[in-house]
View 1: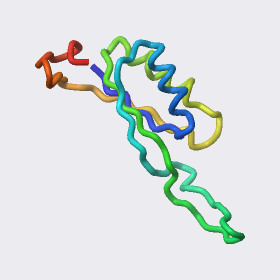
View 2: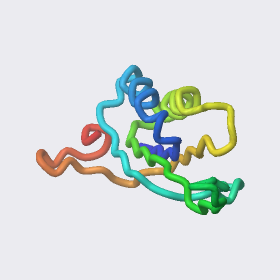
View 3: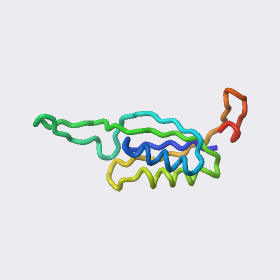
Length: 112
């Protein structure tokens, strides 16, 4: 099992969700987060005064999938989350040692 964690721009969330639903992903977790990457934030103008924003709003998507689904999920997130501009985000894939569905006690792939 794999945990696919993606950080994307907030306005791309619906496209990413639709792409994952099309692959048969049955559940995901979304968190609103802030951060910065290579661009180190950005400079904005408000009421004529320039100020820097060091943390940009992003959305973190977490999806637990079976090993054979992981590559397809990564590809779907990459295609649907891309704008071609700096700050599009990152995708991380982690191994899951164990998963248990609380309600039924199912474990492993059955818990997903």
